Image (cartoon, rainbow, N blue to C red; front, side, top):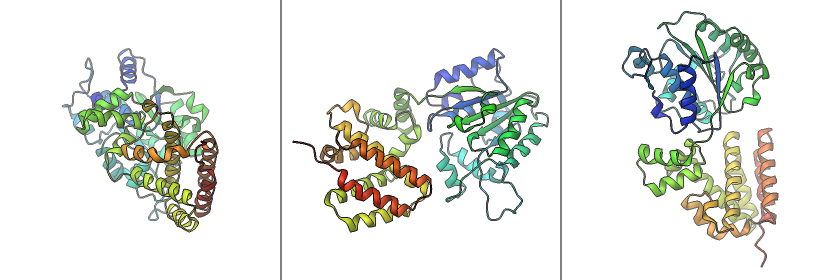
Amino acid sequence: MKWDEVIGQQAVKQRLMQMESEGRLPHAIMLCGPAGSGKMALALAFASYLLCSNHKGNSEACGTCNSCAMLRKWQHPDLHFTYPTIKRASMGADHKPVSDDFAAEWNRLLAKGPYFSMDSWLNEIEAENQQAIITAGESDNLSHKLSMKSSQGGYKVSLIWMPERMNGECANKLLKLIEEPPTHTLFIMVCEEPDKLLETIRSRVQRIDVRKIDTADMEQALVTRRGIDGDTAHRLARIANGNWLKAVEQLDADNENEMFLDLFQSLMRLAYQRKIKDLKRWSETMAAFGREKQKRFLSYLLRLIRENFMYNFAQPQLTYMTEREEQFAKNFARFINEDNILQIYDLTNKAIRDIGQNANGKIVFFDLALQMIVLLIPPKK
């Protein structure tokens, strides 16, 4: 993978290249940033650059050497991936899942591109409602791999995706490995919630913050990579707010957000009409979703509430909506105003917290729907 496959993030690219060219590359770095910002893309491009046999003096991996040929399939013997896994029913009671157990699924995901989310990974491994973690078995396995000599005589790269999902035993074992790293080994961590990592691990890695993708870079990528017109690219880039995954989702006519918009519209219309039985059926529909999907819908609801409130100010530069969302806002936005927006926010955030604590989905969403009847306040005349 080459640097030009990374969308924007020029400052981070230059920093990584400068550290390597000046011989100041630490043994462990951590790329931290929000979802869809391209942290994994940066990590893969940098790993490809370091492992290329002919990269010295060049700004890109050559793409033609034997190492680059292996990297195209992400099967280089000196590149070791670590990522969250689940316990499958077919695994023995004493077996601690490791990344190698899911290598085929991981390669399939990487083959689709360097931009993906935890949800994409969970779908790939058919995790259903399981929480993916990095087990102690992973640190033992990684320690064994890194103790061996480099196959190609250069770097050994340990790329750890979502290190914040390590359990306590794994984190403590990895700490020892980072404190006394094997010769010529580089750890690259790709992290979204660094505060969940052990402080002792955070203190032993060089943190590099990856910001949201600039809107201009996002627009250009949508035009050149997806072939859409400039106006559509501009609207999508503003809605995505620096998240490439959101921008791509918007291009799919059947994407999740389209369904969420339908559910949002149903909730608001039924609440306005005070149709209790229909709202009960709506809450049962929501309860049938998995908890992660329920939380995504509630986050979507929060976003649309904010956008409808801002729509009332008649300042287009302040709103970030699709055409369908804006069409609905033309008639609905007046019902979201200074008299109720904070209460709706509190109600929705409470629902997110309750779902996260495994509360009964039917009760949570029916309560949300009933309270929305009271909170939808027509504007004062």
